[in-house]
Image 1 (tube, rainbow, N blue to C red):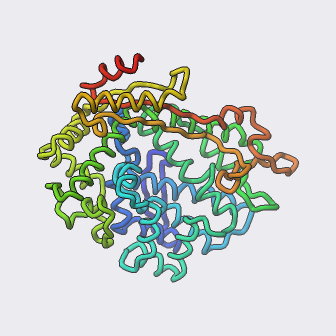
Image 2 (image 1 turned 135 degrees about the vertical axis):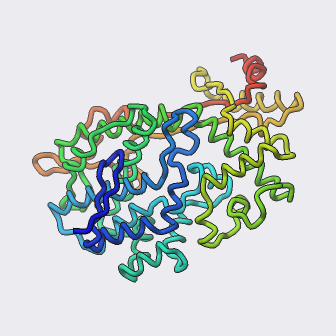
Length: 425
């Protein structure tokens, strides 16, 4: 038996048998340049400035999502018949879901306006990409089917849930992986028991959890809450991400004015900043390494603002945080932020590059209602065969449906004390 083994910190062993066509397909997709590029895209952007171990990549995460999806489908296959083509398409979609992701998590795409999902679809559909060619060699209809699944087009409900829901393979993997690599100890839960208790509802074909797995679901959702509170919304992480955004916005402004000294106009970073279309061969070169090289070059820029921000990013001289979350009258926040900008500008500073307001928010568990199609509530199968929503059976649901949010003002160290004094905080 020909077998390829990948050692993974979350799933231990990810084994692919090359004599099994679907598993050979996964192995071939992993080897393509478009997928190997994900080795050079960090999963958590600048989070290593707060958690030094958080340098893992979207490559390892994507492997983990494929393995998680495979575990889910293997469990479901003990109860229902899964079409072999759907099985291959679902695994490929899980593996390739982050294929178009740009550098530094979601920050780069917010500045460039280039959506990573759109890029993912393009790479899969483009005949010039190795990914497309590999999928097509397996089955000519496979590229379109994979894109359709990623877009949420009609499919068996359990496949859609596996790829995009409040209990999908993506979330199941990144919570465990990010928890492990940050060393935070906040995001652990029992994935094995959770998958073991997965089933399909007899009426709607939705993915559901047997009531025996209820505690594992609750632990998973609590881990999501704690990871957002302590890792994804960490003040240092958010400060660094805001500075990355500032640096890219400043570089984009200089590029529009034809004043950006680096990179050259044919460079993928330059093209992406200005929203210009790239060939697949250029897209493969767009990664954290290329953007970080720009940051290094920009530390010597003639533009003092750009140079200062990039020096702060490279040497961890980050903006300081002023927490506005506990101000009794939250309606005052817009006025306080405006006052801070005015203070800096009136003193001769550039408030657009000296401070920024940040209000990250997330809801650990979303109920249905008007947003039922988007929320896809987690379903629990009772021992008598009845299906209920998690909110109907879990005492933790009331706490998990409340929005987690922070309100912060991030300011350069040189301005922090003056801003705090002026706002009387």
